[in-house]
Length: 353
Ligand code: DAH
Image 1 (cartoon, helix red, strand yellow):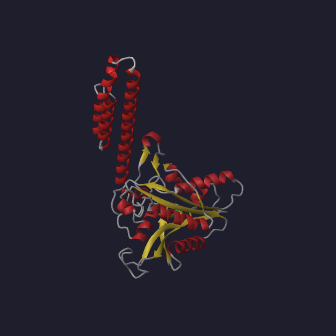
Image 2: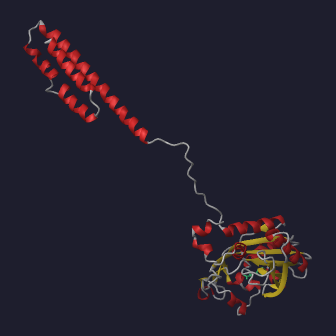
């Protein structure tokens, strides 16, 4: 019997030695440790043995069974480890490869221009005043000295939020310019300091809306930056000095400026400021259309009626105001031909800035 056990053990251990795959090991386990394996048959036959033989054979058979189980376990963990090693070898990392670039966003070109404008006026002591985008007819037009049937209203076709039928002669609208913020700022200031209001020096940036045909040159939505200075003894020379200084800080120390007479209902006198074309330096090019000058902003001395509507006595106080379009300035600086690019959200455009 001992011989038989020895030969079972030898055969099984030789067989397990050669195994290289889990599925083969599983078949081996059935064959050498399963219910009808040779070793199990030995256990089953113990009952037929004599009392003297039984313990010794039983013990010897158990030793063989334990040896086979240990061999099986060892093989199994060896095969599993090999499998892990193989998959790790397939996932080798080449640490010398260049890293993948993470894409980061950038500031919209208009935002970049806006921030430069804030910086320049900030350096000159102007504060930012934020004002609402939904306005009444009163603030958007009437307080700014546009009488009800003034032809200048036609220049600013309007998106109405609540029509005249709902609100009589004071419909709600999306502001067509940032100028109504002047009135809000002045009224807030003069109600806070009713006796002797200190000077105001602010810029008012924000979105404006006009009901217009969208073309390469005009959008229904655009930014403006308004400016307002009110105090005692402010003269047209202050306006020219401030805005020429702005042009030099914004477009370069050699930037030339010129003022042309113009008309706005809320300023008197009114002007438009041109800057010498910064692309051709005044020689004439496609951006300035051969003129050598670029129109940058509208401006003027605040109309006495507007000062009064803001709570200031026009006999004592005076001021200047201006308004510019940051998209327009951005277009000129970067030679952008189509204003629709600003809202198209096309990365090929945006990534250039
Ligand atoms: N509100 C004017 C517009 O939208 C721009 C403007 C012109 C603003 C002259 C001003 C100004 O403050 O003085 O076209």
